[in-house]
Image (cartoon, rainbow, N blue to C red):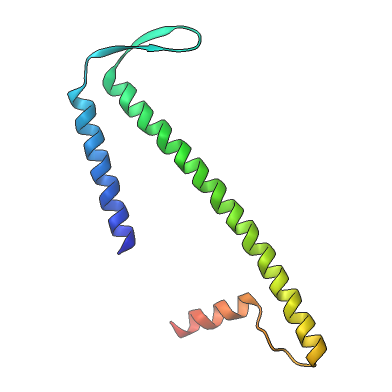
Length: 108
C-alpha cells in the first residue's frame, strides 16, 4: 500500500508541475556564468524539476550504498561474535543473519 501512495503522490506532483509549466509559456532570460540566453519558461521549470530530482536521486543512492556497507560490517561482526560464542560454549547459540533470513522467508 505504501508504494501505491508513493506513485499517487508522484503522479499528482507531476500533474501540478505540468499544469504550472503549461500556464507559463513566455520566454524568460536565463543568466549563466558565461552569458545569458532566452528560454521558454516551461523548459526552465521542467529543467529545474529534473535537476532537483536528479540531486535527490543521487543523495538517495549515496545513502543506500552507505547503509549496505554498514549492514555488511554488522553481519561480519555478528558472524564473528556467533563463532566466538560457539567456541566458548562448545555449541552454536546465535544464528548468522543469513540463516535467520532464510528461516523468516520459509515462514512467510
